[in-house]
Length: 168
Image 1: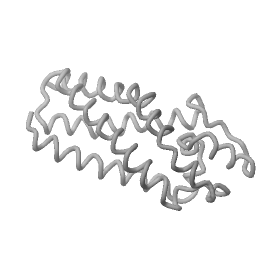
Image 2 (image 1 turned 90 degrees about the horizontal axis):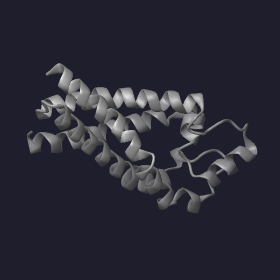
Image 3 (image 1 turned 180 degrees about the vertical axis):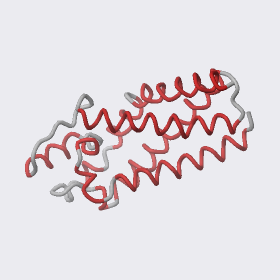
């Protein structure tokens, strides 16, 4: 597999991921259960003091649907990446996809969560705008990247690996 192609795919995947995040958090979508569950618990609690409480657990229908759509979207994008990079076996497709998912997890945590999410007003939930310290909780986002993020990365990696092997 070509290293330069993989590096270009890393940059393209980060750009696509960032675009999806910014598009998703526009308008009232940031107030959906699937979005609110990404916020630290103290921000959720403050928000629900003045707004109707909704189920924001990982088992809620809205969160499961959003995560399921994300798996399908990532699987499609990463299948193209694997094929362009030259993956021809299950393990090549799996490894490349897992690596790109790990990369996007680090990028999401260290840049999107720690820098943009913490500092841009567009990500602040109504009634929590004053909670600067809560929005800068690095450990909350790092834990999410490690678990369930690593588990989440295994799903599209296995799907892409299986599809690469099947296509081949």
